[in-house]
Image (cartoon, rainbow, N blue to C red; front, side, top):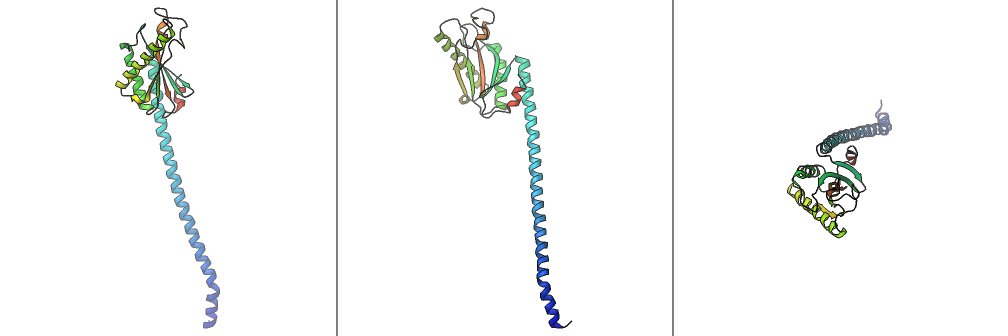
Length: 210
């Protein structure tokens, strides 16, 4: 081939060769990007699976602890508008605000569960009284009951700043009109716990333990 002709052929092939080189670079870039994307997807999927597994384990543990509370202490756990309500068999003697010795085990278990599964959540201790006495006196008595329970819970490790108290007096009676030594009167002299939703474990667990 003559030199001028060879030069002409090379000049003619230059754009084609350049295009092939460009396409090859693009293919490599696309393949590399795809590999990075696939790797990120696999990592994200693995992380999600690990998270799901850990969450499932936590839910199973919580369900077991709540079921144990129900069996051991007759606790009732229900959903309310702002969180969970724990109705514990914590009652009081007539005209008395002191925490009874037989109730301390149930309160200790409640404190353990609250610390483990609901850290940082606000817990309201609601106090109640039977209808003996004036409404004002019963409101004060029920609040003192809630305050004494709050104090006991702090000795079991709960943060006092997250514990609120309220006294509802003789309202919301479990056994209507029962007072003093009447049958069921002790159920009116009680405390109830409400754990607000902030920082709570999955609510579906509580629904599994009515």
